[in-house]
Image 1 (cartoon, helix red, strand yellow):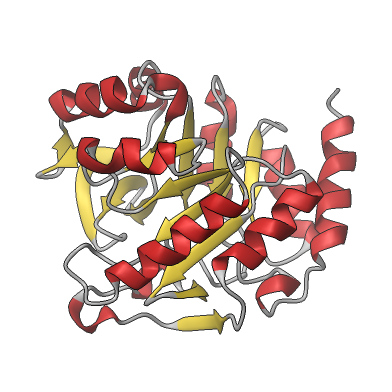
Image 2 (image 1 turned 180 degrees about the vertical axis):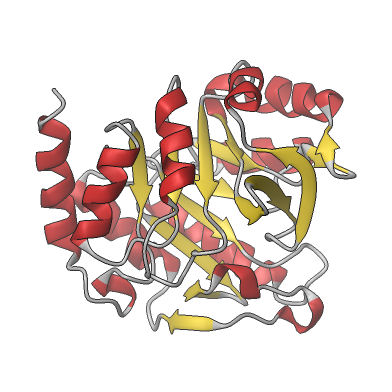
Length: 264
C-alpha cells in the first residue's frame, strides 16, 4: 500500500466534494471543504514529502464557464511538482500531450474510453498510442447497482454497461500502467470503505491500483489493507486534516509506510 494524495479542483478552487453530488448544470456539487490555498500549495506539500502518483482532477466539464480557471489551477500544480502528479478530467488524444509536456507523469482517462455505455476499443488504442501505455491510467470509478459495480463516466453522472470484474481488469491492463478506482457511492463521506470492491481489486492486483472513497479513520485504512491484500494504493480526501478532516496528514504517511514495510 502506498499513499496517493489528491488535488481535486472545481470552479477554480481546490475542494473536497461528495462524489455522487456533481452536476454539470450550474456546476453544482455538495462541498465538504473549499481551500483558501491554490493547487500549487498542495503540490509543494506532496513534493516535500516525496509522495508520487497523486492525482489532480478537473471536476468541471469543458463547456463550463469555470473550466479555464480549473485548468489553470491544475497546470500550476503540475508546474510545481513536475513528474510527481497524474492528471484527469476531460483527457483525450487532443490534450494528453499538452498535460504530459506540462509536467504530468500520467494522464487519467475515463469518459473518452467509455462511449455510449461500453468500452470503445478504438478510442482506447488512440489514447494509448498518443500518451503511451507507461503514461496512461484508466479510471474505473464505479457505483453499485444491485450486486455489481458499474463504471461511471462524465464526472460520475452516467452509468455505463461495463461492470468492474477481474475479466475487465485483465483485458484493460494491457493498455494502461495503472488503474484508479473511486468508490463513488462512499466518495467524500468518510464513513467507511467499499470492502467488496476493495477485495475484488486486491484479489486481482496485477498492476498498480489506487482505491479512493470512504476512508475516514485509521481503522478504515487497516480494513483496506486487509481487503486489498496489501496490494491497493489509497487516496484520502475529505477525512484528511489538509482538507478539514480529522486524520493527520503526517500520521497517515507514517501509518501507510509501516503497513507497507510489513509486506516487504
